[in-house]
Image: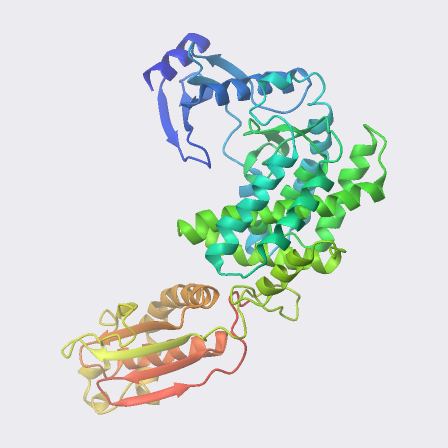
Length: 495
């Protein structure tokens, strides 16, 4: 950190006022935001790979000379292990598109405009950025070649197919890999291939996209970056939006070079296939092996993208890949389609979630969890006004209307539950999505007769009505049990 501060103070000729560590991305580089009191700000970078740092610094300066939007390099340490770059702010395209992702890929007009602005920037980076670039400065391999294609394909085989348990004919699959790799590398491409062109690597300055993390780029075909961006599993871009963005890309590309759109689209489908297989390889390594939740969660979307691609294009020349895609499409991780056409990510053959809701008396103790999963949520209802203090309610329970009226009149119990419903909704939805079969909620009060019974019953009915899952109710202190049977296909994201 001291060396970064020295670089900052020498460059801006002022004293550092604050510095903070920024979250790491996918690399091993460490980033810091460094600021003074005069309004100067920079991103300090510490990277142990001198070669990688030199490549990024070279590319950034080269792109700037071409008029492309990338961060300016302010200062570099003599050993190239530390450098300062322009601070582009805190808003990435990924964060700016969060609402559309959370809405299942229903992007607003403003979000679509940001996506299109980014897509239209891409051909300028690929063609103008490639002009005059020193290939000796690229990280090896500096060119999209058969060996690197086969590396991605084998990544899919060894890191995804094998741990996932999909059967395949080794020789037949290798034949498909060899054919795909040969088709994609039959020409020598001189365009710049960004390699990791995605929303996380785009920063927004105002509404203008700026590029970061391009040091892994090489010479390669135009369509790969377009495939990487539009078929990013977590983005959930609709087929209609993808087509609109492909058209926007081609329109912009034609302003720079002549384009045969039909030939481009034919090659694009092959590049999409390569990209999706490589992505599943990465998800397999990070998710199936390392058990990182983000990657596990995106496997279903990636499989659905692969399935939809095979349904929309002629890949009969890859018969073993076709067999594999059929197996993946029938796997428990892949969702059925709802009436809206969105993937629900829940297989109809997957065991259904059962929610168990208990009321209990703290005098008798918290109910045990027969599933062995630890008991789930326990809520204490004793902050609410207690009907048991009044003679007319002592022999009644939270299921009886006079007690219900008493509890609801002052509103304490309904306010209490209003905070619990969102927690329960989130966890029921996620448990369904992840294929879990048991979830438990427990409500306790002094005697287990009034407040806990009311709360347990109302949460149970709320969950049953919203999700249609089976809910088993047990008012332990009263000896009352009830089962609300599953009524509909479970949803992982009910509206």
